Length: 307
Image 1 (tube, rainbow, N blue to C red):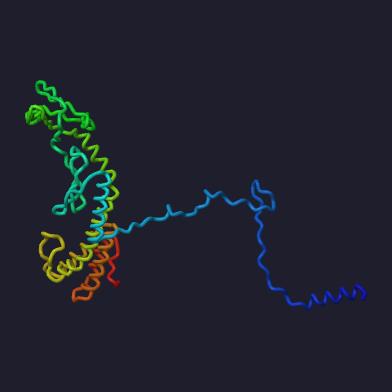
Image 2: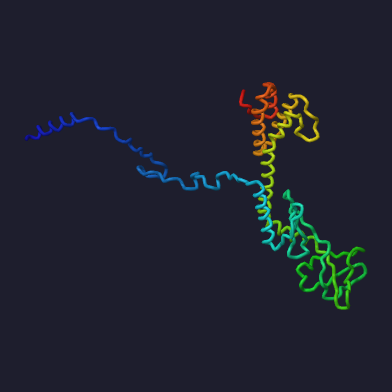
């Protein structure tokens, strides 16, 4: 078959063939940049130039458990932290935990039910004398046995009438000295143990705060009921609220004066819910004027479910 007949047949087949489906878009080749040869893709920026959030960049929200069980657990953690430093939990009386140190000259520690921790300083510490001290006019220089030299370099030398002026001889051979531990030495030892137990103490205090806060939220509706039904003031010592207008004003003032904190926001939400369910369904709801005035004063919106 002549070549020109074959070429005409192929041309006719191409013309009669259906149109091809559109293909993927062409890849755009970036133009050359400074220092990059034409036709090559520029290198990705260095990793330090690319922002990739890590766990350290994310906000941390600490959830504090609360309640009697949580309080018992956190108190036990504080006691264990003391014991790890050699201190002994001697007893708990009237909600106060008392800890004694491994050496009596360090005083004692008391953990109160509200999270306060205080240390006491011993007045005197008895120690057996290895020899009679040298007593001069108006001075007291104790001679320490080897076993007491840990704190013997920091002894407060008392020279007043109330000081222990030398050994008390029970027998010819038995002698006792009363030493006053140095203030700086005692405070340094107590500061060291406080530094070691502080994580557990801080957690215990957080549990105390959260428990008090959550319990206050639970009792808040009952307090507001007493305001609305009995005219009882929210602040102890304030006069009785006789009219419903005064009672509404007291509740709205309480809402407006809460702290601008997550805890304060939690209180405001409880108050708003109570107002919606109690006051707004009564015969004396919050008026538009009262709402606008308290919102202007507080700088925030009072959510009453209606506008």
